[in-house]
Length: 187
Image (cartoon, rainbow, N blue to C red; front, side, top):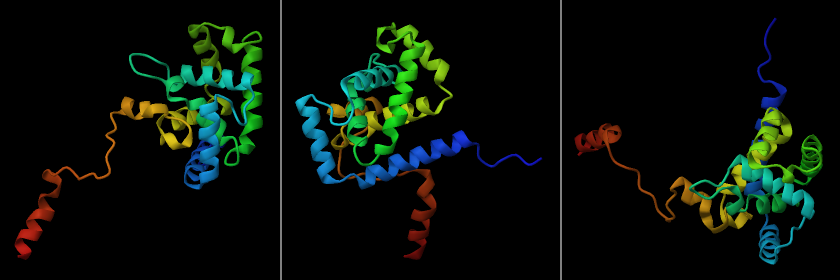
């Protein structure tokens, strides 16, 4: 029997990645302005407070604060709130249901668990679609351009050591010896 080329879960992950990529390029200036205004006012646009706090706790365990800032400091939940507007509106029910299931399995409140207990609860669901979506949104929200709602103060870029400049030059080395040699012989 021939094995399927892609498993359903892999296909969903690829679809989510494609959706995030598409939404990043399609986010309208009005959406970005509204997201910035709500973040500055400290009020979520699309997530209710309870869901936002649960999602923030999940992002904080996926990319925890250590000797460097984590998803909480990067404001990944604000990115999620902004993207749940038009670009990812269809994912709100999945986020709501996933958070509710996680709260239920945690005895009523994921937030009431210690960090170690939260890690155990997340390990139990890490092969599921909800966790995959949260993983993707956490990293997108932590490392994207800050104008999309996350990466507050560009702390995600600091974690990566990303240099903020407008021009990059390729490092020269052995790999362009052929190019340099062929341009020398062409003279």
